[in-house]
Amino acid sequence: MTTTLTEVRRSAADMDRWLARRRWARAGWLYAFMLVMSIFFLGPFLMGLLSSMKDNPNEYPPRLVIPQLTPQFIGRAYNLGVQGAGSGWNGGLEPGRTVTFDVSVRSPADAPQEPPTTALFPYQPTSLVAIARQAQATEYATVRTVETGQVGEVRSYRITVDYPALTAQQGQVIRAQLATPDANLNAKLPGGQIVPVTLDTPAAQEKQYSLNATQAVELVKSGDRYYLRGPVFERTPLQIDVQRGQSITSSTLPPSDRQNFGRSFAYRNITPGVLGYTFNNYRRAFTETTSPQTGRSLFFTWVLNTFFYAFLRVSAAIVFCSLAGYALARMDFPGKNLIFVVAVLFVQMVPDQVNLVSNYVLLQDLGLLNIWGLWFNGLVAAGGVFLMKQFFEGMPKELEESAAIDGAGPFVTFFRVMLPQAGPALIALAITQFQGAWNDFFWPLVILRQNTDYLLTVGLVNFRQLYGGQGDYGLILAGAVLSAIPVIVIFVVFQRYFVDTGADSAVKG
Image (cartoon, rainbow, N blue to C red):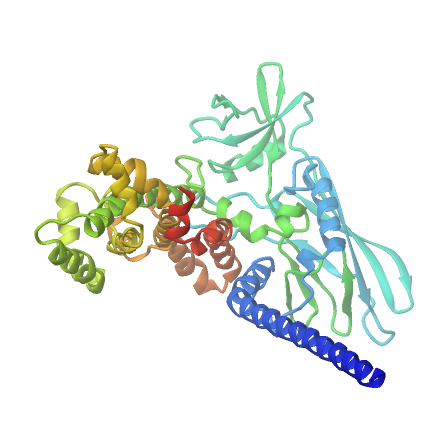
């Protein structure tokens, strides 16, 4: 008998362990499936995010280790930004600064032993808006190369970039922007005041006709005069060439481009700072769309326009869709079913392109070819009406009966009793409408005429048309990532409301 009880207990213990392993195995398979699905859905976004950090997203084979995300190179970019402009975050090159950049070259015994050839080169990326040609660092700064050591076949060189100031005057240094010139060179101070610029040296006088309006400059205020200290450069492009048989083994920052079988290294900016190195494409999305007339970034304007349009769409949907859905779900009136079939179901089946000509002509006659006309064109969403109708139909009738006993009319019942219980449906409606407005493309492309009225989707098309043909996909990826972030944030924050039910809300009330 004792042996039998022991065996039973042992068998029960084995069964419990087997059930526990089975539960863990099921949980493991479930989490593995969720992980695979998350990679499947978020993989393109993550790859776009990582590629948007690179100087060359088209590189092949793609590197798993991205220099722009490596702490070592980020620290060096910060130090170079401090050397060039005193700012480790924004970087750049200012007058009176000296920047040092190190490079190592392998020179075998049977190869040439000459030092590398170094030079600054002009580099001005294509801008989305037409702007005057900006000054280049190669026109103002000088480069010299000095050998600093040798270990075996590898020689180390220090490249020094000197940018002398154009004036010897001492005083307060002011960052300004050149204004439209007349007989003299003028500059716009941070406060908006236009002042004449004094050119007191031959070097400054030589450069005055090569400077255009909107150029960022530094001025020295001495007494009542403003002296030109020199232009301010956002980037310092450098090219290093070695002889055949030599090879570059390392440098302070990895090159932006390699040519001539690896013997020519191009650095688009050796004074980038952190923002200009890790987030260069994101900064370009804002800086290369700056309007010369207003000084505002068009990309930032597109983001604000999209948020404003999404707010209008969400507000209209909450008001009109909830009213229409409640009327179709809980009220009896002649033609209710016909209205639901024609105005809700049928409208959802008809593509927007069918009403293109009639709606466009109507909005043009009303003078609404702008964001207000875009909002008016999609004022009531048929899908939102259908969602709210289905939700109100599932709510208990006792709520309305209790309100009727208390003497409440239809409007009081709706606003004081039914609408507060529709929180989950309203949240779901708001999210879907926000996502639809944020990703809306067809009607904004048709209706909006001015680039200051564009939504983000239409603006990104301009990015693709301008930069895609040049293979500059980093900027396009950065814009796409920025456009996806608000939708992801909204969904993550409010996703729990999707699992709530109308019955749960009614019980809470």
